[in-house]
Length: 129
Image (cartoon, rainbow, N blue to C red; front, side, top):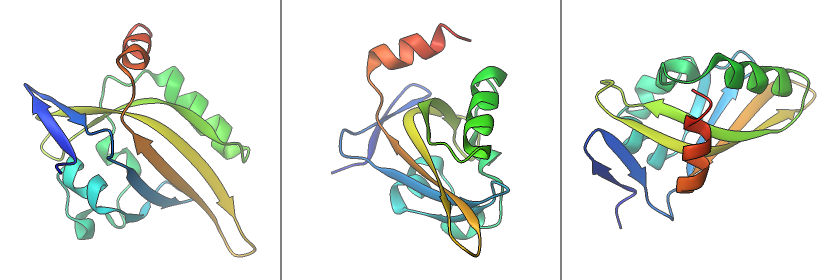
């Protein structure tokens, strides 16, 4: 089963698609799963060492990004709707994302989990743009 379908310039995640990425405390990607790579258009080798913001769509409101940064900076879980772009910026996709701070005695990391949002969640997010 395909991880997504494309309608015009929008990529719509399949119900069973699960995007996973992990960053260090500076937001630098240290791992990503196959669905993440396939949908973003990047090979894993291209993503490792790059800032997670490489996939952020320019339409994302600064307020949402500020809330995300403030929450995770203080060690809190963050969840919300995110609009991302593909490698060549020709397509975009929405995710309902949960960002979980992970801290052990050696380092702080962030685990980002993304799934298909509902149409209502996307509409509500768009209303904040």
